[in-house]
Length: 175
Image: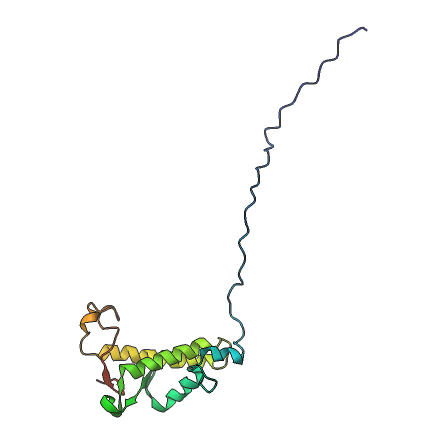
């Protein structure tokens, strides 16, 4: 045979622009929970979860909020300020608000607000009642003579008033 001998193939280096794939490490996928969002109002049976008593004759929180109407005084409409008047014993003749009765207004309206969904026709009324009773609580704090020793320093209204009111006030929070 004449001519040059065939040469052996030379290996070629990988192209500098191609990168080898990164090894994949399996990772556990966390379970996905449904995301909360606005939804329909709870079914009427669900409202029984927020009942004020454990027997079937108990009131729902909405019914308890409605029952407060008989002892509620509207102090102001703008902003809405409501007082939950108390009577009997040391609370007096019904022209006073004590911190306990006002706290019941705040608590009951808050629970009623929680028990209805935002799309429920009762939602805005429950929200308004909560704001009214809360504003009453805040007004009680503002007219309280001095904070109790457990409230030093004061934290509400920029540190100028106690967050817990004095015990007994006029129904209109004038004193």
